[in-house]
Structure formats: structure tokens, C-alpha cells
Image (tube, rainbow, N blue to C red; front, side, top):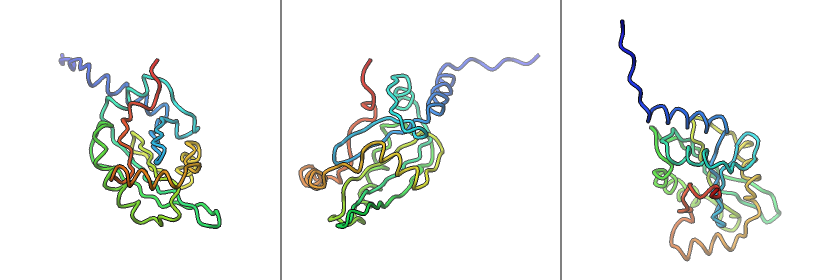
Amino acid sequence: MSKRKPHNMRARLERTCRALVSANHAAVVNIDPSGQQVLINWKNLKQICVRQVVDAVCDIPHRWTIYLSVLCRTELGERYHKSIEVAPQGNYRADHLTDVIETTYTDLRATANPNHLVAAGWIAIPTDTTLDEAEAANIFAAADAWNQQKAELNASTREHGTSGASSTSIRQVAPEK
């Protein structure tokens, strides 16, 4: 008779949390210059306010897909964006993603025309999922990214001496209950 596999509570909790995140199609969306950060369902574009999902995103290491984008508007009012998708190798907790986001974010912002720059942001999905440009544009539109003030983005860069990337914790995406 074979011996049963021992009970591992941590592994069980991680599997449960990953299933919860996957079932809710959770994605963290951050928009600068407003610093707005929300947790949304990237399939139906509705905000997720359930504390268990927030904890599952923040407390458990995941394989992340990060979609960074710079949103621009020409003098004629035409919208366009420059984007890049990054998928760091390995499992990371949400608070360990800042280095990956910051370096890529700075490089991407440097390629944008500063006169056209409206906002910059990123979408972090805690699964091995790729987004196409249309899906990302819909997510940014749902997060109201196009209604930012140009002056605020440039002012926040000068005041803080950073790329404008938000240092806001992902844990702040949902209200306390």
C-alpha cells in the first residue's frame, strides 16, 4: 500500500488563490498622472472590490504578464498609444514587480512625444495571458485613462524626479470591508 501525499496547507492555499484570480480574470490597472490604481475583470471590464481577490493577487506569487502603454493624442485629437508587453520569468509577488515595471516604463516613456503625452499606465495580469492592442485599449478606456490632464503628468515627473510610475501598492486597489 502506497503512502499518501502529506497535506501541505500553503500549496493548497496557493492553488485556491490562483483559481480565484483566474476565475475572476483579475488585472491590476495603474494610470499616471492620476495615480489611479484599480483591480478589474479584464474580460468584462468591471471593477473587482472583493477583498479575497485582492488578497489572492497580492499575497501569493504569480506568473505575471505586464502590458505597459503610453497614451498620446495628436494636435488634431487623434488617439494613439505605444505599448510593450513584458512577462518576467518565474513567480513573483505583486510587491516585487516594481523593478521590472519601472525600467520598462521609463524606456517606453522616453520614446513618446512629450507634446502628445496624455497618460501612461500599465496592466498587470497575474496569469500567463497575452493581451492584444484592442483588449488593452478597452481596459485603459474602462479605467478612464484618456481623461487625464497633460500638465499633471509632466509636473509629477519634474516634482518627484521619477518616470512618473506609481509607487502605490497594489494592495490599495480595493476598499477595506
